[in-house]
Image (cartoon, rainbow over all chains, first blue to last red; front, side, top):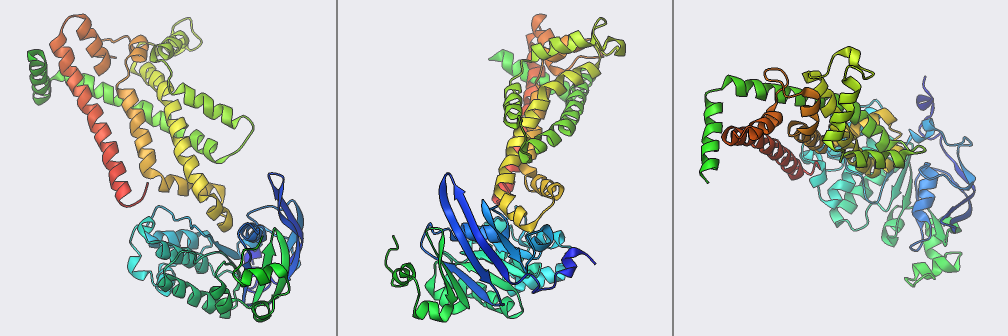
Length: 244
Length: 235
């Protein structure tokens, strides 16, 4: 049995982040973040602009190598086999210059699950089935993001990373995406979501990591974070004021 | 203006009657150009792809060199190939001088840098755009490269057509290494040069019209490919 097959759905948890640091152009953008993300459900990463949320997410997924510190999945260091059990949806999704269905099949083929019917079912789940043969780059912003989510979900990831997947999208697309996130979360996929949208975090998140100036200000269950945040920066942020 | 209309009529007449000399020249021109293009693509596309996706010491300098080589003077290439293929040259024993094969070699040297530089640019853009997504998906390098080529197919076709355009319209190098020998190495461009030097302007212009038509057809094809790809957002 392959390494990938050995990695059962939840054997990548908890995600342990130990003193993760990163500097870009001599500026510290992630500053000694230590935390543990455990349990299923949806973890939201929040914070003001420039807090380092997206970079932190990229470090977790392994797209950016930190200067120091480490990320471990169920105690194991990141590896290709572990990355293959993860998916990421970017804020501005990369859409292949092919049809919608071909986009999905490309991803499926990388994991050896290129069953056209499964792909069509996945498109239907994201309400894109009627656009299967449509050139993917001609889709609207919301449709492109739903396609990106369909591509991420078709490989049935153990961990799904999302970087502001619904920013500037129409409410219908947001609703479709959120419904699907809740569904796959219930099915056991761990979701880690960067979002600016307080309403979305309240609707979806089980716990919240709040970052400010590259540091982790707090990591609490969503209910207590929204009711009574620990940090001053989070209080200011939730009050809708500028976090300086 | 009559020389133009007469030449146009002559060109049309030559084509309409499938003049055997013209057909022979046309056949050789297309043959030499297509063969040199095929060889250039088989060398240039992989090199362009490697330069596009691999970072290594000296890579930028190599890209700069290939960009500069796009403007290689054909007569210099012709001269260098001549020196190498002439009897006293290192490859003189092959006996290729004044043969269509020598013309293919010269054209290949001229258009390979074009194929490398332009395909590198096209594939580099693809690599930049797809890198994060493919890294996230752990797409193997070779599979990624195939995906770049598939997705950049229309742009790459334009690159290939640009190479063909350069090959078919080239004169300086092929006249030196081919020698413009009747029924052996005479192609459109060298025939035009010869007819002009003989004062046979009507025939030279007629051949020019045919060459221009080929060149225009290639360019229209490139435009059409690009436009149809653009309509589907494939470029």
